[in-house]
Length: 322
Picture 1 (tube, helix red, strand yellow):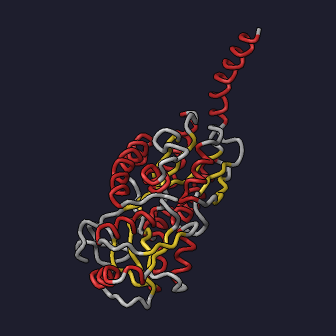
Picture 2 (cartoon, helix red, strand yellow; picture 1 turned 180 degrees about the vertical axis):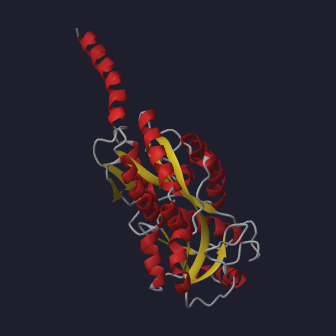
Picture 3 (cartoon, helix red, strand yellow; picture 1 turned 90 degrees about the horizontal axis):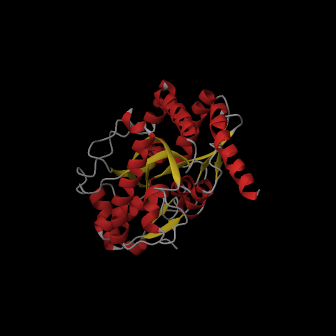
């Protein structure tokens, strides 16, 4: 009898899953942002989710769950019920670099999530407060190398994109500068503007709106950005190997039904095709993925490739999370 009950229960669950997918979404959706409000991932999440909610016919509520370089919020999503009502906006830090940084990471970004859609690439820049003495990238590097203990930089938490970019930069110039972790890039930027920090390595989304209030030395891309035409590239600044582009993407828990993932992907594509959404993202210096790059499969492949790319960089730099 017990076996019969279990078998009937399993059969009912299998039958109910397609039905639930057909009526999805029947209530509001929670999108976890694993960083404090105001940072690049939070900004992109709110821009994209606002349009997605209109497409889906249900509100998407953004909830900030900061901590441990974004892994706290990510773990919450990994362990959530795979019904499409808890999703997240992850990034390079939470879904690639975390593998190399956290030896005991409680989730595997390659297997514990259903990739939904890559929403925006975000080139990285290095900016100091207005009164920092260096005026060029080479002057900046010379100051850091001459006396690294004199200066400090802020980031959005161990393993965040802003942290990893600075780790990569300091590894290249061989200057172990003091770090000041925050619970997101937004608070780090506020501290920089208040001159409580010397500099940050951050995404265009965080720096472009503050360009006139900062000294920005470099963009880590081969070409200058339309939204920051006066900022030299890493090659122009004399450090061509400094290439870094962050990214922000939507994930659901693993085992989320394909029909629901497809529905979320379609809503994400509609958002990225909307002229208003595109204009806002482009104004912030974002790179919008092409049609092929917006598929769930492309995001899954991208995550795996980024894990393979950043793990040796992190190990070579000798960085570990606390």
